[in-house]
Picture 1 (cartoon, rainbow, N blue to C red):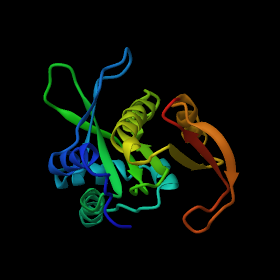
Picture 2: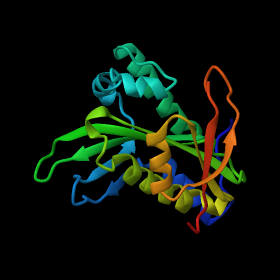
Picture 3: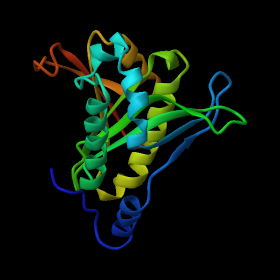
Picture 4: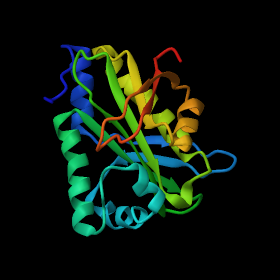
Length: 206
C-alpha cells in the first residue's frame, strides 16, 4: 500500500506535521492506574518487547513471534517502516510512575490499513501480562481512536474496525468498553485467523 496522502491545503499541512515530528499521545492517570504515554516504537524498546513477548497468553493472540533481540529488532523496524510509508501507525504504550522518570512498556496499539480516501481503517492492540486488568488497553485504544479520527477524518476516514477471534473474550470486552459496536461474525481465514471472528465498528459520532 502506498503512502497516505491527504488533500491539498490544510490537510496536507497536517500530514506534513504528522511525518515531520514524532506523535506522542498522553493519557491521564485514572484512580487505579498511572498515566500512559503512547509514542512510536524505538529500537531502545527491543529488550522490553522481548521480555513481554515471553507471555504465553500474548503469544496465543499475536501472529508475530518475538523470541530474541533479532526478532524484536525486526518487529520494531516493521513498525517504523509503517510510519515511513504512512499506512500503519504503531504506538508503544508506556506506563509512567508519579514523581519518577521511569517508564514501563505495558502494551501496543496500532492503526493500520490507512489509505487516502479510504473510509475504513483497522485498529489493534495487546497488553503486557503485568498490566492486564487495569484498563490499559481500553484507555490506550481510546487515545488512538481519538487521534485517528482527528488526523484522518478530513481525508475520508469514516469508521474504525476492530477484529478479534470469537474466543478472545478479553479483547471483546475491550471493544465493548471502548464503544466499538459489534457488527458481524467473520469466517475463519487460516492460518493468520484460524477461527471465526467478531467485527466491531466505531464511527466518529460514538
